[in-house]
Image 1 (cartoon, helix red, strand yellow):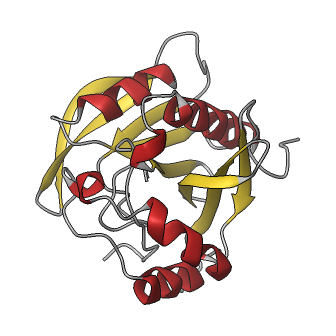
Image 2: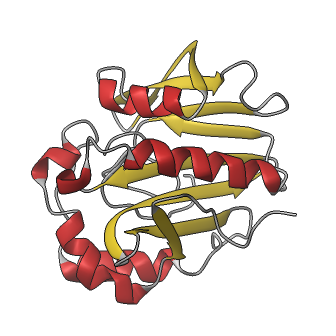
Image 3: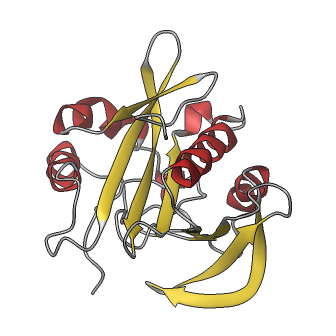
Amino acid sequence: MADPEPTSDRLLFLPLSAADAEEMVHVLSAETLYTFTGGTPPTLDELRARYIRQAAGRSPDGTQEWRNWILRRKPAAKAIGYVQATIMDEGRRAEVAWVIGTPWQGQGYASEAAKALLIWLRATGVTTVQAHIHPAHTASATVARNAGLLPTAQFQRRRATLATLLHPAPGTFPPLTSEWQGPPPLQAEGLSPMRPPGRTSPGATQTPRP
């Protein structure tokens, strides 16, 4: 049985709520977070509205489960980023993303969060994990590899951004197939899973696939 939430040594994974917007608007305020995903830092009102939509936990048509967590650094529980998973296909497939605010990048938090998220997803029965990553985003690629993902030969255009699909590294999650993709296609806009969200990635808006 999976834990109620992902867990890791240095991070708390707390379910997202609209109340988190006031703190997270500062975490997501750096323009550099949007270099590969496009977009601009959200305003407080925009982020609060986004979080209200995401906190619903499910797409309007009921086909997607939306899971979003604010990453808080132990022991002070200061917010440093977020991770998200859009679960579909009757719980078998998930699209993931993570974002770490610029002051906390380069300290291994994105890799730690991504690993914990994949472990949690596997325990819940997910068999395919996807994450979209811009081909030029080497930092996100490193996070993906650290989480046990390897690139495939496939490319796909999403919102004018090429994304590389990845599968899990041999021996990491034997029964699990994984892929990553740039800006989180379903839950996040403006950020990608592996850009430091990754969705890691900056701001996300969980919206149903067109």
